[in-house]
Length: 370
Ligand code: ADP
Image (cartoon, rainbow, N blue to C red; front, side, top):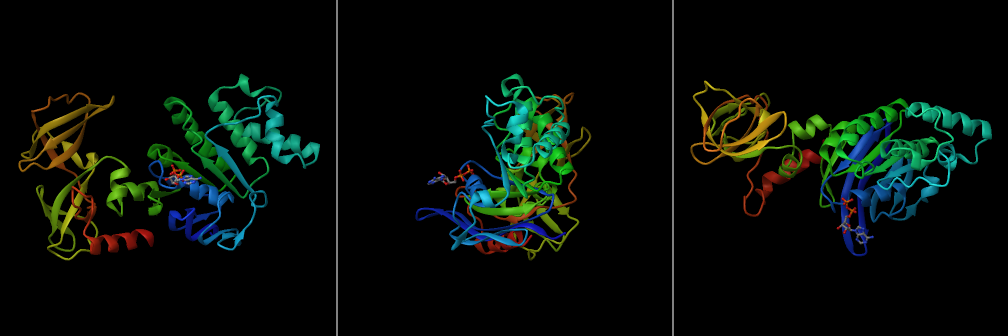
């Protein structure tokens, strides 16, 4: 499939301050991408640049092979054929649902407008609501109408800026996969901005994890969770702890858990001090295991417990157990290691978070070339 949207080395600034640094990514037709990162990392600024609201300081934004933005060129927003949905739903309260949806297609013939409204209301599961007004619909229904309104003109790209953050958690749980399904049915290419990893996992084909204006990793949800390329991605996405280890040979490391062998080459020479990522699902509770750890913290998570267990020399590991394994802090928990893929990262200074620079650069380069 050819690229639908291309960002090449895009740098964005407010005044003299660079906010987004040399970002590159590529989205294919019908794909949903996501910009995921903590507040203030530049997600909305990047989205606004794609929409044409912010000029580009360097680099290029292209869609369908046409240049939209460079330092010397900025196609105006209204000529980009891009739809937007914001957190603030902003339906027009005095217009009916049909009138709201028709808003962006007023230049179409009356018959085409009517047909598109019917088609979209069917698609979003709200047929027959044409004559109702926004206030008579729930928050989730209103957000689906806002989506229909943005999709009505058949934009080439839909930009979704934290569209679910005003909704309660239960509603989000059901609405997010529904919205993905709607986008897929219309083969709509879209970019979602969120700081919520579960939302990103449920919506996106590809996720860009951003930190301070830099894309740390661009990959599938599975990739960024199971194969994080940087310490930041490993920390930001999912739970986990880092265990100091030393590379033993191409496939294995020595650690407090003994010699662990992975299924892929490690890309570090033997003897390199590294950190090994341990996810809670890598550590299983096993009553009969000779390996034990002392429970130092415990969280009730509804369907399961999350424990932090401490090994003999102070290393902390996460461990999830079913709810009937209810143990107290201070008890010893038998654990077994179920780790076939080793995620190994350069050693970081725990005080400063600074990694061994030479190795960090190698990992960074790998991440960017994904
Ligand atoms: P995010 O969407 O990831 O929360 P933003 O893109 O909104 O982050 O903001 C990135 C950085 O740019 C923040 O430090 C923010 O304070 C700054 N910023 C955002 N808008 C402006 C603006 N209009 N002028 C100056 N700085 C801004």
